[in-house]
Length: 319
View: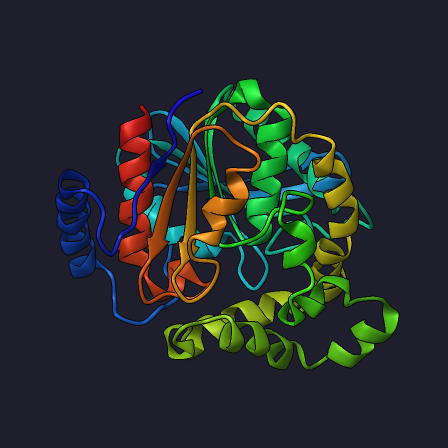
């Protein structure tokens, strides 16, 4: 068993801190203080990949070891544009929209995370990629974990960002948090309540789960609200959460043996914080902990430079 590691962006060991501070300095020059909807670099291409009954919208760019970026709820693959631009300098970066979200199709089912892990495998197979580093945020964390469990031999490293993993302790305590009432929200009447009010519903997540809601700016909110307002968009979004009970059952059966690949667990200081790594230590042997200072749940919107630096440092050390 490898000794688990911990990095805290606020402090950290001296060599790692110097690396992160240098990376932060360069990134802060390039990134604005408030979030915007950043375009992907011009050399990224888009394609549609068939995954079972779903058609996934995928962005691909760069050359080198493969890395997959999996978004969550309240975002689409668009959230990853700044990280994708950085990693594409020396990685082949794959950014799918999950089924039912973004520009992917909206199938009737298949929103359990094990099935969606199969979607990601189908994307990589279509791109002739065998092994990849897997990175997820929010719902994407749940899909990323399911992928690592289902395809451990295809997973170079796993990075999870600021979300619980259903079925992984202390899941029973986490799921009782009243802020997570939306895990069971959905169905025809919920869809009627939200229809035409998607922006109001999404604002609740951006406002309540951010350390500074102003970091999710108006352009960002309008962009994502329009995507979630497309016909069937909220039905599919609710399905992502309403499958979590099944996800918990699936994951509870996979806790032994623990994951062997290196795992990076990133939590926002004002959100999951060190709890992200605490969860992953119940599921993996080699866990590096990072806490992003002055950030809530929306790491890429609130603290993009610090988040990119942490991911970059982890991938560089793992290659």
